[in-house]
Length: 525
Image (tube, rainbow, N blue to C red; front, side, top):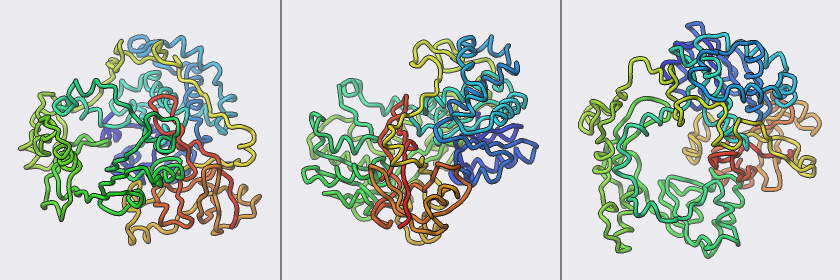
């Protein structure tokens, strides 16, 4: 579903997303839907700024979204609230799904999620009986070991209820697929001869592990960092720093500032800003494509990423023509597409307007008659080509010793108002405006540790420790604590930030980062 079309929705579930803070351009549309009579629900283990403004906050235990979604399906089948005609026409595997969700009755799901069984029943009925009904998902839900299963389960709900039939109903994720389908990516794709080579790939989530591994063969001798600040943003922060401290590691960083990563570099090269280079700006959250035209010449010796690599290619003696295409030529080629979405959009038109909306139908309803991106064009509740064949709640298992030492579940979230991930985390006036970072802790967890509001705390586990101020509140449930991400460790007491506590675990599919699977203990200092 397109973001602006949510104004037609009458029941909106914001699942694992906090638009008031991190999706601000969507929030006015949600407010308009509310003024039109929509009920707004947030599903989030943390009482976010969005959760404080909606009609209903569902607060499950962290990492239990898969069980909750399967529990909703159980109720929908039991109450006969499914759209059987849509299921028969446009889905596969409903009988397998119906049998599968029998194990996820409201009482069982209540035990898993920490919710009341009546809450689960009420949410299922309200969603299935509302029309148009929308579920908005973003990346919050994926950062758990069960992340892919959670997305699979939640994405099945609109097909189960036939929500796709209604304008303003269905599922809303990101709009980047529209740009992926329409732009001429083939023109800038690696040549087949190069792309087919068996080149090793290192998952950035596991960068600390890769930099410190004694078993990796060959080991990593050089690290080139651009558009990134892994000393802040990558899990298992202390392992990252241990790798960066290696005397035998050549580290090169292209940057605007001396970041916490750049402090470990052998060479730091000045990078251009968006004011100095050509680019195409597509979007995760809108249907507009924009061109970025340089306003000034690059300052000093600043270079774009592509120009830096062109210069390296020249010095290394490479002669392949594709290594020397200019930024403006890459922009022009990427826009040369005959796809219907780009009709009327050219390099020249974008230079005149700055940005244009993709040429989409007036009513964007992609799955009214199925048309899913599967081999059958149907929504697969059951898929024999995927393991597991059905989304299944399989929580991370912690050993008893760790559970005893570290009994609190840590959430590291985008709660800061003025930081953009880790960007702006070094700007004094923004940090002053943001204020002192704090860890949210439930009153009962604080009481048994003799912690008062405003106390200085040490939050720690087997990977590291972070010092922050206590904020005692009901924004978290008992057994859960929350701290902000994005702060630079060099600017915090003790030289550590949130990722000193997170692990480099991977999700069940897609090899994303399960960063919300961390256990900690807290002491007053």
